[in-house]
Image: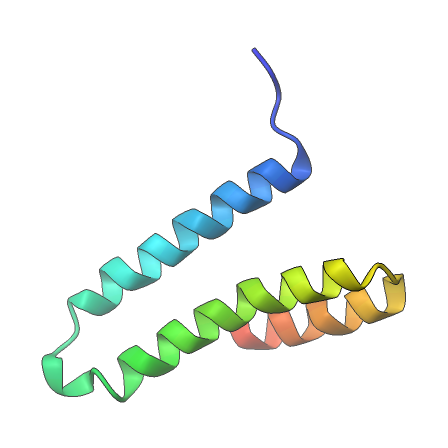
Amino acid sequence: MKQETYHEKLKREMDEYVHLVYALTKKFPRDELYGVVSQLRRSMLSVILNYIKGYARGREKVHKNFLEIFYGSLK
């Protein structure tokens, strides 16, 4: 059995995170669609995109900066 690489595991976990947020927010009242639901979905995407952008830059200090933004979106 092949062991997952770090990036394979991260990709899988991010995909699960996206599906979880969308499944949970579907249960919110319809009148929250442009309020809390929108904010939660945007912050979820921000987490993922900031990780990817930071990693793609290829420099450790830049990557750490994007990780701080990533962490702020999680909070």
